[in-house]
Image (cartoon, rainbow, N blue to C red):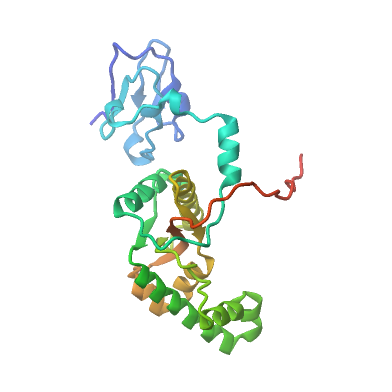
Length: 274
């Protein structure tokens, strides 16, 4: 099997695919040659698709990916720096939601975009649990409170430092601080032995968060929730996580009840320049 197919009528032999390959498994021995795979191509290829995506003429195909399989970059959709700045700086953590469910098709789109995130060695290790029913979100939030009560009883100082006492008091008073009344919660989990699970899932959740904002949804990272998933077996079991997986993040999703009008000031970057 050749693994790489090159349309020689389209290929201009510019070597871009060779230069761009992150594992250096495409070669051109001279400017007169066409790209070919190295002997270890199949063992080392990350299946990132860079070589197909970067080719300016669409000449290169892999045995699993061709230019026709890929969406083209539309220049008219590229955002300006000013648009990007307002969008990124204007993104808010939403903690007050409408009592309105997000259609499943939109939730599926969120996951689709999230799975475009970068990951170490292109492992794409993330798995997802989507809690669709608002009543189930509320029930699971109650399980987080149960876990917090245990910590308060066994380690009151640690519980106080982590804000558990306040969260439990609020729950007892009818104010839900765990999932903030969001209609949906999405949990990212991965094999606990994968060394980059935290980074990879965080990147994927960040894309989900930003895309949700772009389509008028609100999102907020659920720190209490995902910490409880890993620490409280009944909650992990309720979510159906495999025993060899850990949760690496959770995010609440819904329609924001209010619209923000301004961008607050943030601290200046704390950077050391070398």
